[in-house]
Structure formats: C-alpha cells, structure tokens
Length: 125
Image 1 (cartoon, rainbow, N blue to C red):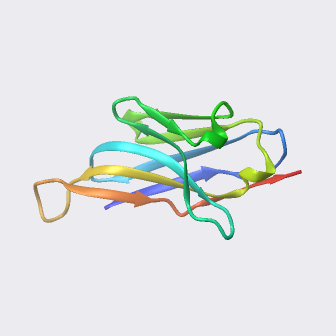
Image 2: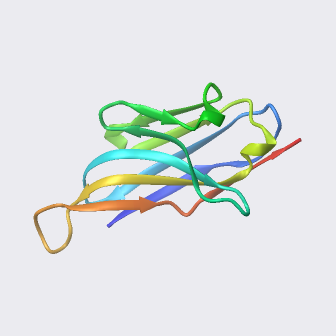
C-alpha cells in the first residue's frame, strides 16, 4: 500500500505561522490528489486544502488567503504553509493522498486512498 509520513505542527501564538509536510511512499504509480484535512474535538473531519495532479487547488473558505498548499510531484510530497493562524485553526491535521499503486499481486494498478497519522496544531490566543 501507500504510507504517508507527516511532519510539522506544534504550538504557536495567534497570528503566527506553521508549516506541515507530508511525504508518500510505497509502490506508487501515480498520485491524483494530495491534501490536508483537520479535525477539532467534537467536530467532523473537514477539508483544509487539496491539490490535484492537474494543478488545481481547493481551499476551505476559512483558510483562503492565509494557507497555501504546494506539492513537489517528483518527491510525492505536499506542503501546507499556514500564516495568520487563529485559535479556531487548532485541530489535528491529517494528510491524504489518492491515486494508484502496484500491488504485490501484479497488474493492473489499484486505487489507494491513504491517510497520515495526524499532527497536532495548537494556536493559543
């Protein structure tokens, strides 16, 4: 399958910045989309930002203008730069990747939809 390794996150004061990174590894054939989701206590997991292999990006309304997602396709890595952080951004952030991988049983490639383990982002007021 495909594994996602996240890094970054931590504690920051309101108005500060943090960066997250996520690297995918495994028998990857191609990645169609990579993105970040977050889940605050008592809330459902929600999309933060996503980028596709075609170059399109989507952002949650609440982070537009403050967060920037970028991807290095050759390294199967996605980054999230978070500026002007607010206490409402406090959550566990999860990386997600969707694409195709080579399974041990041979062709054709199979679909994967993988999640990272999550990284905590805490913004103090």
